[in-house]
Every structure is written in C-alpha cells, then in structure tokens.
Image 1 (cartoon, one colour):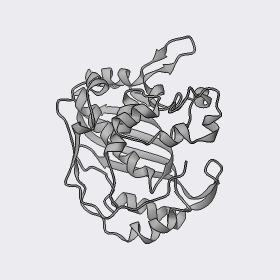
Image 2 (cartoon, helix red, strand yellow):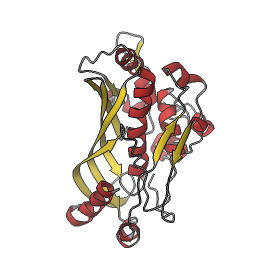
Image 3 (tube, helix red, strand yellow):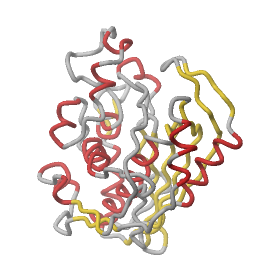
Image 4 (cartoon, one colour):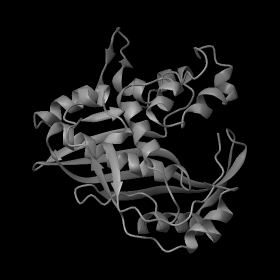
Length: 283
C-alpha cells in the first residue's frame, strides 16, 4: 500500500496537466513508476484505503489467458470490464472490423494466444512460455506481448498492460510487466492484482517457486475529475495490512485454466479495508 500511496502523492506533487483527446478530459500525468509485489511472500497488493474487488481483475486475466475477444465471455467469467470499450466507444462502433455487439476485436488475449503470422497461421505465445518454464527453460525471451501495431485498427482499444516477461533464476520465477498507460485511482488496483496473480498462477502451473513481480508504468495519471477524491479522501486514510491470495491447488496446467477454472477457485484471506470510493471512469 505504501508504494501505491507514494505514487499517488508523487503524481499530485510532480505531475503535469495533459489533455487527453480520447476522453476529452485533462490528466495530471507523471512519466515512469516502478512497483514491486512480493508474490513469494503472498503479500497480495489489493488496495486497503478503499474497498476494492479482486475477482473481476482475476476474471479478466483468466479471459486473457483463454484468448477471449468478446465482452459477453468476460461477463460470464464475472467481469463487466469490457462492456464499455466494446459497446460504447464510438470510434469502435464505426469500425468496419467490429463483428457486432460485445465484439472487442483483436486485443489482449487474442494476441497472446493467436498472434497472426504474416505467412499464415498464428503463434500461441502463452503456451510457448508455459511449456518452457515447465521444463525449467528460460531462453531470455519468455515474453507474452499484446502490443501489435499492425492490428490496432482491428481492436477496440490498444493494450495498456502490453507485455509480460517471465524469468527463471535459481529455481525462482520472476515477472516483469510493462504498462504504457495507467489510470491510477481506478486502473492500478486492477492491474497490480493481475500482475501478482499472473506470476502466482504461472508459478503454480509450471511447478516453479514464485518470487517477485516487477511492474513498470510509463504514463501514470489521475484524471481531473478524480483528483479531489484522491487528494482529500483516499490519501487521508491509513493503509491496512496486506491480505493473502489463495489459489485452488488443483489448478495444475494451462488446460485447467482454459477449461474448468472459475472465480470460486480464488480467495482473498484477511482483507481489511476502508469504505468504497466511487471514482469516475473514463471511456
């Protein structure tokens, strides 16, 4: 919690105002933030200075792992996070590549599981990484990238968390996740849960010991209509102790994640928090 609150205060103290054409709002913006999550110690980085909800974040991650491209599939897992970008983004609604209601296009998990090759066929980036790590192999390229400029026009949103690189060192699995843009009051809680959970899940299904997850954010920002709540409500609250994430130990493989796993297989233990804060969301 301290590193999260320190980042929020740093944005307020050092950030610059930037106009955002997509949302029509200004953002108080800071370039470069580095966060670390102690996955091996199971210090789950859910926000405690406001009530936060972890299941939607893990459900979204599970949807990416399954390569989903439809908001309805994410809703079925338990998260509505893609409803707005799939159905309320006017530029996407006018896009000829949109296949209909709830279609997200070629974003995130589609790229991770079916990156289109120019000579035909596709590459399953996630399966390659899982296969290598399960064999104890780290070729310095255990990378899953969602960032495909050649297909930006075929999706409703460029990826914000765009790359994950796993590293295996002395029997311990590490993760470096890279994020080009982050709505800190709303999005960061979601994103840090996903970074933590991704390393924990990958360590479990590959039989490796989890270490530290490193989270690099390039453009960290607070929207102008979020600033008062952040400065005068959330930053006035005392952080509470980190809870723990419990993952069903029966999850043993990528196939398990693709087939039968649900949000009932994840539980947060010992979560204490302050009251909710209703931050505005910008589409």
